[in-house]
View 1 (tube, rainbow, N blue to C red):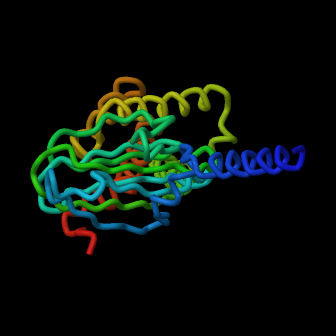
View 2 (view 1 turned 180 degrees about the vertical axis):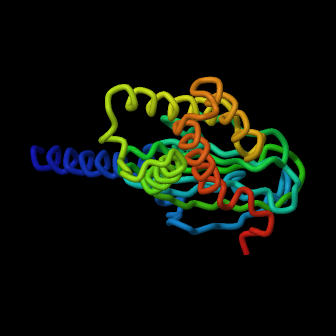
Length: 251
């Protein structure tokens, strides 16, 4: 009798463990469904419309990097449909929910999407793209990284040369007043970038607003104005490497 009870208990324990292993958990189930998307890689997908969709979404895993800025670009290849994107730390394919979302407002219609990863860790992020219209369409997702420190260095060199200073220095060599002004110029630029959707408004409009705001802060003769315009100009160009290239068709 005791052996029979022990056998049943063992079977129950094995069944419980099997169930625990097989339950899809956010972030654990994602790699079984979502493929890895590496640096400077892209993937194409198509939506055939309601009733013809396999899952209604596509998903991929990308890795953040504290030394490089990661950028996701979602392109509408035939200017049709309305693909949107969600990026978070985990994805539950059962409830179709992305958890710990990066704050981002999707564009309307067939306007492309651009999302920056935080760039402060080695975390993996799950990217879910899905059609939000009934119109059949083609789209692609591109992931690339760039070195933000190189852009800062280049912008400093350009700004300080314009000032006629030959002893080029890095931000950590600035005096307290210049450090505060330097941080202020960077904060102003990023506040404008996060307030505006780069894919929707465009390169020229965003950079023009940054130029105006920095001019109001520092005047037209400040090296900080030159730095800000150079830095954010290159930052936007690197971020929009695939966004602004009309010939980039993911093929």
